[in-house]
Image (cartoon, rainbow, N blue to C red; front, top):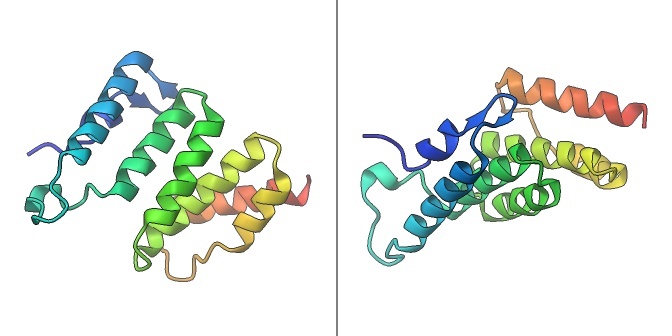
Length: 142
């Protein structure tokens, strides 16, 4: 079965959004579907991954790809707030993303604070650690 967020991901390319209106519609559809989930009844097993944090994370990625950096920063911060404490990899991913967005908007003080708080000791993702290293190199020359 396809994931609910797959249409959003399909419209995001490595170099940004291929289909901006379609990506925005897909994100809205994912948010609407999530809002219809009964918070009291258990979600279907195939939908367990789709949390409010995941929706915020998808929104952040979509906003960033469309060049809406302020919206991406807001959605990334919201994803971090909503993440369960045990999701260390996701927390590191979104924290690096937040620092990158802060740098892109000229907020080096905020990026320094964000980067300093990132714990990658239990994260084995080379993507996350290399992105964090790039953030730190950028901040060292800022």
